[in-house]
Length: 234
Image (tube, rainbow, N blue to C red):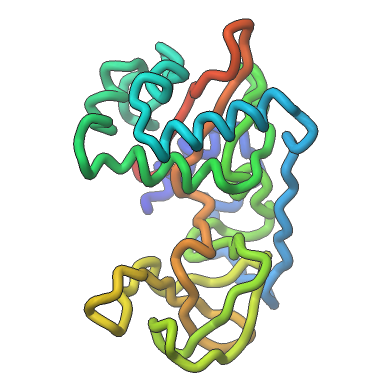
């Protein structure tokens, strides 16, 4: 990913330390797999818990009216894209059978959320926690956060392959973000990682890049609103 795009992303979210790191020509890799346990900073907010559960149900049911009803009219759609509902509809095409909205939004919401505060913006609650809590001394390029408490590392991209180790809640180097299953009939995707001083594969749903889609919300008198839904590559 171009350094300028990473720079814009971190400026957008006010991550000055990550910005300085990402612009470095050579970033030193971590000496070992760093522990990265999620902190759900909204765990005690009952209104958020109810809203998130309701939104997840709506997404599962493809309740277009409810989902679009919680999108802010000035929603941010990407670093280089115009704001607003018109662009949101054009980008996500919620009426399409294969719209990525119904896949990407729950992937973000199923993980813990963290607060962001930008100098020129009100504080926002963003999910998942990965980018907001990303360590300042690790370059976001080429690394991912294992979001599962425990996942098997297999020596091949297959659920029947031998297990060569177990990891959970750590940051690992990523060699390939999308590897097809060894079984052509399987829809499972795998991520090739370097962990425990060896190469292996874990299910794609057990790891998250800090520059994947991030959904940010703010609470108003009318309830929670989706104010931003974007990724660094957009």
